[in-house]
Image 1 (cartoon, helix red, strand yellow):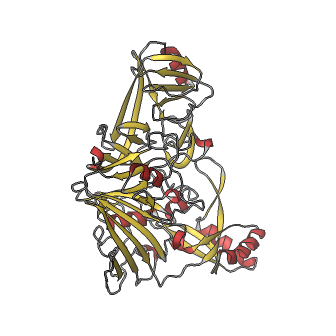
Image 2 (tube, rainbow, N blue to C red):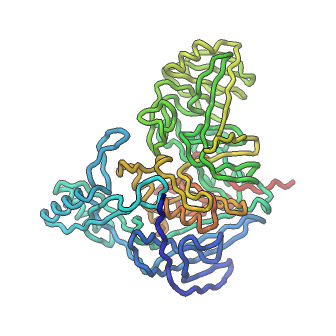
Length: 551
């Protein structure tokens, strides 16, 4: 049976005061997970007891609250632990081999034997190392207890102060990285800047929808889409392609559906936010997709929608190499691949080897030939490589109908019907299920218990995060935390994100795209501090809270 870590409470004396807009400053005494949604004080976000952190942690919390419309409330907060002091340090990394690709890489955490040997070698070279144990977070599908050990040298007030030591250790034959201890989970972050929006569908008269703004082959900032739609609240959505080497930039690397139409396919069974009936009915579920092309009695499985044939970002499709399972930020390949392009794909179609069939709005083939061109209005295009190209050659004849069946199912095998008022935004992993923290990090491909070089910083270090959840009253919770020290904020680990969402009352929650993508816009204006040096990042799809139209 899975054993979850127990969170230590922080102790202090609560005190609040109100100003305009409503503000509360408190020294709170509460375990993480004790606060109700948008309560005057929120959890202190203390580390778990298994991390051996101090038992008494003072926490300062400041909130400003605003109601944007009936049923839409936003709270902006800063959580501080004034007694915590973080520093820069030098981490000595362990050589590793990627289990997935076989490529040489480096890991922050390794075995005790490696750590002890490395520490002794550093001492022999004149340095004063320390060995730190790192424990597994409370994931539902990974080992428990000690994950491994890391080796560090020094504590410095500034990153530049740590660099000479890192250079000297590198010159002695080691591989180093300069790290900020505030990204570790052993102690709380000294500052976290948080935005939380709660949308009550029983009171809110508008709609909540996932959107790619009409073109899945583009990247736009969350705030620009929000301004165009006159949204009250908007956050970034799911994972998307960011490099030409991995496909068409902006296309989603997981399931996306807009106005009831699939814009992309699932990559394995991963978490999704289902916004039914314009946000009247919302849930989080692990979804899969099955799409099939049929010509007469012959059929062929479509493995992708609106993506480049052979390139599967985040893997997770049958026949993909090196893995048919989901792997975050890894591009797998298919040698036999049939891809459907819909009118949502607004860019020029991919070219290259293979065969293409163009269909009109009645599903009849109007041309067969080389790949390229554009999707016709109201029609669709099928592109095939390998055996999929052979199937198209044999079955796609001008004038013949080729129908496409699309099925979305949840983890219980139930079919998820999509109508015009429905949308789906997906990412990974699940954070909260049935009111309990339930992070299936390995199953959704964001960590690998057999390869500690994979996903460690992504999942186990503090990062900017965007999260979505539903409470017992059916209210949608959208939350962001800034990270990478933008505005001084350090972010959440995945476990902290789950703990935070549960503390807000979420009974279901998932992790959306984070890092430099994390964005919240209010009334079309950027509200948080994205971590990219260039500012707000253009993203793929977004979640928009749109007021009802008035005449």
